Image (cartoon, rainbow, N blue to C red; front, side, top):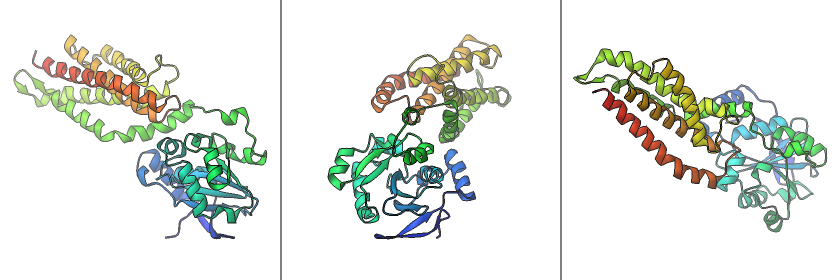
Length: 343
């Protein structure tokens, strides 16, 4: 099957190298939308190897990236107008930053890929431009010893690659700065929102059914009346942790994401209570506060894998402390909610 991004083949001393187009076609845009919505994201990858952009020769720069297709697409688009060798590592379809943390974008894979593509035959120099966010997985001195190639750490964003290369591999302070702006956080929301969609639907359905409970059993009319409100409350709790907390991330107090999610839950629970949507009795109100804040806190903690604010050890420590609180709070809230139906 012909791949849309391969426009032909470029000759080299190591054989024919696939020539790739820098412009995206419809399938590239559609694929981006799908993975942003967590559709087919686990298998969105390209074949590892060496690719040609423009008309590279033995003196052209070698840029290293991951085989997650969204990363591959963004990099090739940002390198338009240059003559570049693009070497793609086998990161199992994971982006550079996450793959570096997992070890798939690492020294071993980089050295192995240099040998497999016969890079020493393709270029006369021994320079590799490796993404700065891949530095945690790549040891420059070990690569040098094992392959003879020198690792040059490029900018954080691929959009700066062109300027970095044309300026003689010089990076400005801005190129080295890792940002996590409102726009960057917003891009992650659709994926995170869709990731837990089945759990969300199950939670909404469960509270919808439980809302029909009363002292004599189960009421269909009560279920239809209060059940919709309960389902909406669960949805808004999920919304608080997935959407509201990430968007307000820098402005919500507390350092840990679990506490930020808890605060976002309060921002939802308080107006719901004032609107009378958390019930009228103290038991119902307390139960909803516990469930909404617990769910919002848990969902926000999932955002730690997307954030530039966190570290692996910090996330593990936070989970040990926060998970018992979230589980107990949510469970206790659910128990009080059920009990309140019989009072």
